[in-house]
Length: 119
Image (cartoon, rainbow, N blue to C red; front, side):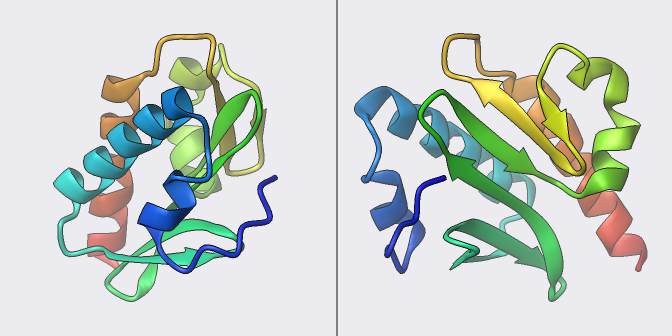
């Protein structure tokens, strides 16, 4: 994992190769389009987003993939769609060598936002 000293998401993204930066910018745009009211920060050395003062999602850049963290209940909801990707509890890896699944990410973000808004 990148042990960044970045204090904001722009600086974090620029620490990566151009093609990875482009994917991270797409992911950031999806997050902020879905939840423009989300508060953006760096937490656990990666971009972090809170919604209604609760964790929304995180993402992190790695040599071979982007890690996306939307908590276990979101990943469980989309287990069939995520089956093609390496996963951990509450995380999924989107490899750089595969097409970036924008629609799937959007759907996951929408679901997570709906869940947080119920709390």
